[in-house]
Length: 190
Image 1 (cartoon, one colour):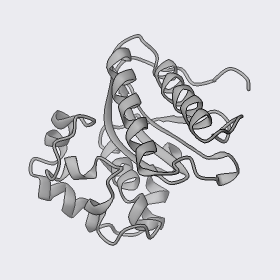
Image 2 (image 1 turned 180 degrees about the vertical axis):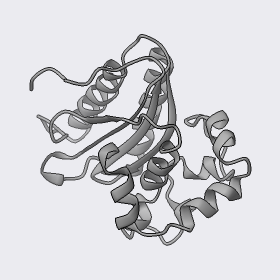
Image 3 (image 1 turned 30 degrees about the horizontal axis):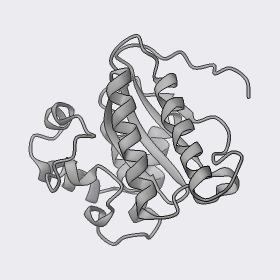
């Protein structure tokens, strides 16, 4: 794998995502999701990165991160997923890569577009038919956004700025106009 072409900058927001090699699972049991979230918390604190939104799916993940310092997001994400891959390989007596190449990172330039990308991220379990109600998916910070959980992997100030009341975001996500229209609007960010 060559060097990354993205330039990660202080104050910028990025949609970071990747999927399992051959589209295979990257999470095999509940403990895997929780282990990864502990790694995310550890490394985002260490690298001064803010988690805005996330959703972990059985064979892929999405994060919306803000880089708060000169410590590059790239190094944070590499630390998280290198650590995760090593742990999974050890736990399941496997070797080699877990992911399909380098993670993807798209900078979201427009502050008003960030909530649109968050909606896309949070709707993943619903669109995949994994749940009928988004708040039932445990591996997303959607419950924090709508006030059902007090997790630490979200930016409450960002949420309040865009959605003063939890039901505002819930309505925004559930009053979803159509996948095709949303994807057209945010295509360059995903």
